[in-house]
Image (cartoon, rainbow, N blue to C red):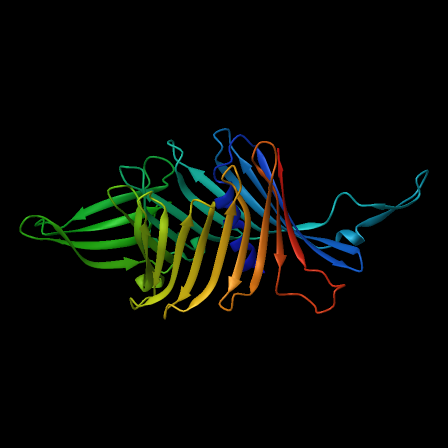
Length: 355
């Protein structure tokens, strides 16, 4: 359940990254079943996101709801004695994200908390001189316990820093990357005759979950990324390609051995306001196809997902308010259907509330 909810929230973070001017956005996810003209509606979980005055998300919390709406009734005594719908429903925190930003409004860290405020992981982001993300590193603070990896903190709170330590003859140096005053990565470099650095070896603290390095072209487009995991072991890489309009048209995922694992191709039909996403495996066997239709305002209207046998797997319909904000997404599960005509297609409804 936790992994599934994490995937859901990250999808919504991407969808809502451009929504400014709101203090809070709440997404509620309902499961709806219809049978014999009777509707059963259950609130499964919700996500509450808070924003600062610059429109940057400061935190996001996922709640799990325990009681179906059809059973949310309480007994009231007195003048209005009887059963009434309970407006306050039980919920528990599943996951909570906290975000920090730099002075130039770049996200510099994300922290994931559990339901008892335990920290699952922390993630830090580094940017180059053009403001492009070039490194992301995630680690478990509870495992960052080696006292030899603690840096010198002289100027107050330290988010991250880099320390260059040269040897006496100037033929090599050591680069220590500090996050919250703790060295997560130490890289040794040799200097050639022209004083160009050559990476010799790299050390990753056992608390590091993974590190991803991003590469961009002259157009500031992300071209590929390389990820390493525990103790620096390769986790694979991803390569991106774009069309002449700078739209991403291909994503190729390689495994830790450098072999193709998956591909994702996007084809745009601008005339009919449709684009298609094709997902394939390592043998370029088609696995899924997603068709996305846009409305007259170039907003996502309908998404349909088909499997490798051209069967409908899922259908998603988007609804907007007068300010072009998403207010509802209906997700129809096209696989879970009964032969009986009385059994309708199960629906997941995602509602958006803005404050």
